[in-house]
Length: 550
Image (tube, rainbow, N blue to C red; front, side, top):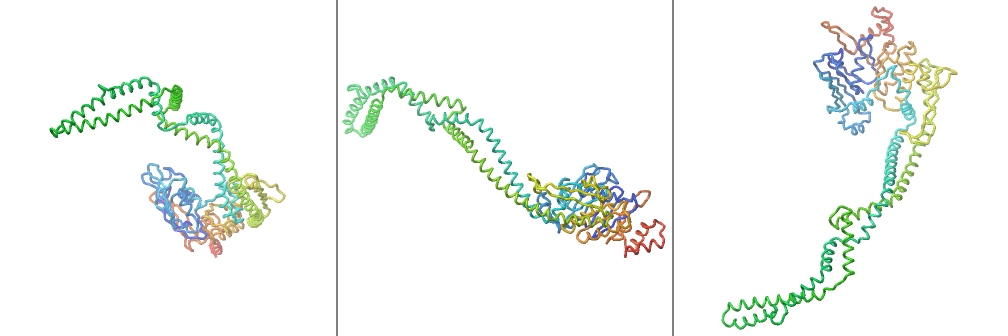
């Protein structure tokens, strides 16, 4: 509920601060006194856009601040989703700077207007005779029926399941779209993969094949060089081994003369051992050489295959080709397994569809049971508001589609006259009738759900004294469970308020200012007497005012 309102430098207001209580509050004032200014200030708190024309003094900033007690409003989830700091006593502030820039704050944290509007519509409902579009909207009509049907928790469950259902549908469509594209690429990817599989790739193979190819391709020259090396090592008279053997024998004889000859002897002996090992390895290499044209052709073909694949895939290593092969295997496998994935996703959707159908049926049955009760209450209230022949025809018909609140199509028709045709509310009811219907609906709603603060702006325009008396009774009854304001020109309604505020203008130093004050009991008597008989109050007007208040 709204607990206080402060306004500085807005329109005709210099400075204004007023505290409000729960229950039924009345706001009165002469035409042009500034009631619309008060509503304009509240609208800024609720997220309406502002401009420089709002500033009384364009050299100073305008500030409007309202405090709300939201402890009973279950708004913690909204505060969390919008990243507001939650406080049970929440303060909303709007500032309009001389530059024209506007700022909004919730509990001193800056917020954008969209977020402020979301919060604002949960705090105050400003309703006038000309603001009845909400009443004719399908969404609002469902809210009314669901309140009486007790569908709140079931609707929350449905909304969660519908969100999950839509996510599954999106995922299925993405799989189907991917499948269309994948099928186009599948044959080409399979061809590329088969090429790489048939190549029997082995990491490091390219280098070993190139070495083998060089050997096989130059085998005669290599064999000739190995034979020459063998001859140089083993030739009986001048071969390296023969020469080293003779040199070793010579130095062996010198070792007896000096230790320095012994060192050389050992070095020559080591060299002989090494060269003997070289000789054996040359023999092994020579014996292992074999002219093999078929193997040369095989290696040559494999090298050509590898080089072609490297060039085709624009890489330089066989390891990179192996990675490409693995990627292609995965893509081909995904494509070939898509049917299974699609079937599994469709199965999940079918299961979710069954669940949604079951919840939708519960919503439908609850609504069907609640509608007669709603019609009975509305027609009874409207009969007391001067519409004795008002009739409603409300039906919910089960459809094939999932909507945001179930599977029901809603038919909400109205007839104001006996024997008249039923039609949509906006076509069947006048502005004054819509106002009374809205009052009746809000009255019914207030018994079932916690409504935000409601402000009726001259909703009683054009009605008779007796009907206005009934309207006042309804608003007074509503105020037992919620905070209700009524801006009115009718004394019958003004007298029913628990508190009474007056909007007035005054001229100070040739400057007009608007103000708002809370009236005492005696001041209320005077105000209501003036509403009854004008400024020249008669004793009978005062007596009538006292009677109304009592």
